[in-house]
Amino acid sequence: MTHAGLAEREVTVLELLDRALDKGVVLQGDLTLSVADVDLIYVGVKVLLSSVETAERMRRTAAAQPTAGRTQPDPVGMGR
Amino acid sequence: MAHLYVYAITDRTDVSLPKDPGIGGHPIVALSHQDIAAVVSSLEDGRPPAASSTAVRHHEEVVEALMLRSTVLPARFGTLVTDEVKARDLLGARYSAFVEMLRRVRGRVELGLRVLWPGDAGGSTPSGRSVVRSPLASSGTRYLLARLEEERRSCAAQRRGEALALEIHRPLAAIAFESAYETMPTPRTLLAAAYLVDRGRIERMRREVGALARDFATLRPLLTGPWPPYHFCVGASSGDLVSRGDRG
Image 1 (cartoon, rainbow over the protein chains, first blue to last red):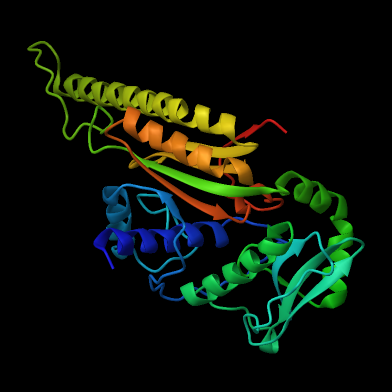
Image 2: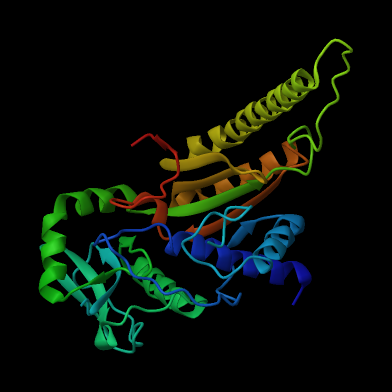
């Protein structure tokens, strides 16, 4: 497992959370979400193109964030 | 109390469903209305799932499995409906909108792009106040002039950033069927975009982003996907990206 590979997979999780928690069809107005700690885990390679620097920077920023949730955007705009 | 967890809307009422249990441990079923269906599974005691990465991954796995065999509109994580009757009612109430959304995303996938702003390259805000040396100006005036100077540099940086973001976005939007983008959503993010792309154009998009990465050597693009079309089936929710380019 390369260093770049791990960073990119964790970034993929952040991209997934960004979509599934904030986009997509909503059938009812009120959603109740309880937010737990988010562990960064492997969901499959979805990174088509990136630089190691990008992936690593995003991963570090995510690791420094409080638990994900529907709160104010974090400085790099992901991992809500 | 809502008892059904919703994964997606599909255009195949007979779509082959995942065999494994859904979130909450119950089987995944399709509830149809005319020629579309909501794919759901029951929740124990109507308890909404915690937004853990495990649960979100489970949600995504179901959506992607459906996407292999049909056209889907992915539901937002945590979307619940009261019961089967309510689910069919909602499909009926929004039938035309869902059919139109399905038409737009059919044969297409979502690709995501993030481009980080380089550390500096003229884009950063000034670190300190400029010193205005004028023996005639009062301290109040000097302060205001310094703030004005900061503001000018910040606005100039903002305009440069937006111009650069658009220069990156435009050729990619031209490849996509539809796109949603936001320039400089955060101080460190130059561009955040989602592109709805014909399946046959994924590689072209990848090459184009690669070319842009070479042309703009200090920028760092991150292209991810293919995703279900989360950004392109948003109906009644907030948080849309601010601009939408549409050729369809």
